[in-house]
Amino acid sequence: MRNIFLIILLACLISCKNRADKVAQSDRKVMIHQKSDALTPVTETADTARKFIEVGFTKPLKVKTSDELKKYLKDSISLVEEVDFTGDKIPDFICKMKPDSTGEGDEYWVTSNFKTIKKLKYYTDGFLYRWFINLDDDPEPEIFEAVGDEDGADYMFIDQNLKTGKDRTLVYVNPVIIENGKQYWGYPWDISDFQARSDGRKVELFCSLKHRIVRDGNEISTPPGQKQMPVIFFKGHHTQQGEQRGIKDEQWLSLTDIIKNSRSFSAN
Picture 1: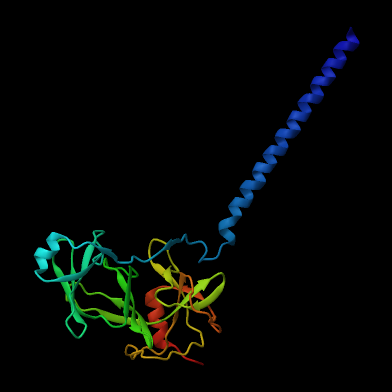
Picture 2 (picture 1 turned 60 degrees about the vertical axis):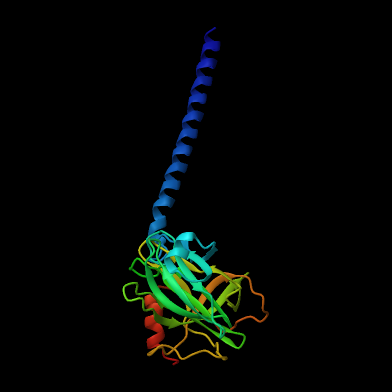
């Protein structure tokens, strides 16, 4: 009987020891995991430590002409596009009047509360694409515009002044699509969105200031002081063959820095 009692006691001691070893191993694993996590922020660079989210442009949407707009403009409206160009989160209206015999027409930019901010001219020949994205500290978005015809096109960022109704061209750029790791010329009908990100304080565009792209066609002169035409990268699907090569030093920059660098650029 005594021997049986000793055997049971010994079995209990061995079982307790095994459980203690497992708990110790589990605790050690937890400690190692926590230590690894604690090291992560230390090994991050200043840029990767910032938390970014993808941001994109807003594209004007064609809508039916409302009775309110017809009454307000009192003219023959050819086309209405809806987009928030004031930055108040409420859709505004870009209204094209019917063009004359030469293909020229008036374009009214009307706010959601029916106030005309701008009156511009438009032309039926060629093409005009607009996208809106806020890239600075003021409430209204900037405009990325592609305008041209079969002979060539201009791609530019435009700053709005809603008080005066006068827009200002900030910088001319070269649009390039990145698709499946390859780079192609960014025709406006091939572009689906910007390569853009935000950390909640500022928006940055994926770009390059070193390339060998030579423009031809009917491009107009660049803004005063612009010495170089930077590459801006986009998402999209290319419809024309021919990769863009020789683009180097891709980086994330704010529009302000892109403009600054394009004005101080030196080929050396």
